[in-house]
Image 1 (spheres, one colour):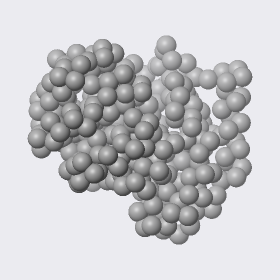
Image 2 (cartoon, rainbow, N blue to C red):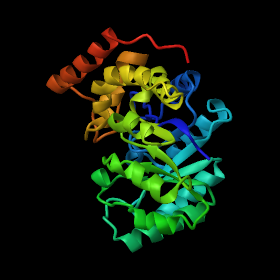
Image 3 (cartoon, rainbow, N blue to C red):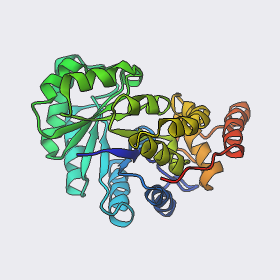
Length: 298
């Protein structure tokens, strides 16, 4: 149902901590112009846990109404209780979301039967096609292959975001389920490895600053032009490592400052990088910009 590059877009704020709708519209449009295949709003990179429910719906409606065109827009559902998650999913469906990216309840580390009950309740409560986001490294809950055996019985579960940090999982999923699920890689610095092993999409982070390079890697991999994809990916790798960090939001917003002329405002308690850490990250970004490769014809 879904395939290709789906940016997990950042949320932009004004200097007085309101949603910067104009800047988000500009940034989302850069993704679409580069050829991405969908958008995912209000995820971890979008500072979901710091957003009010009404703000999330505003961002969703912006992406749907003025930017995405025919591309699907997925709303992330990440709540601490199943009741709130179902309510959020239903609100997203009413507001026009094309689908959901659904996490287990956080921060509670649920047992397998609790995780499945939560996921089924959210998906069925929304009536929307859904991608299950599995990130045990960050959230402490692994949606295992045995759990996906049960999820496979629900037609609304159409995809998984595979973020276990174990490249073997992509092969295991495909060997076990064939094409039952759309398999998206969710770890930027394992993306090409996952695509080569059969992943059908990439939920990407650094794409928000470097959309053309991200789309080029995807298209080259799909065309079997692996050497060309690998050359771009190796250049990209120091930047992609910025996604695999507790400071991923600050890091990637810093990349947006340099690469697309945006800002790095965050919502407190998260704060933009400063001091030595800002200098370190700036050095990585500037080095990449100075050696930015010429992209091949696609």
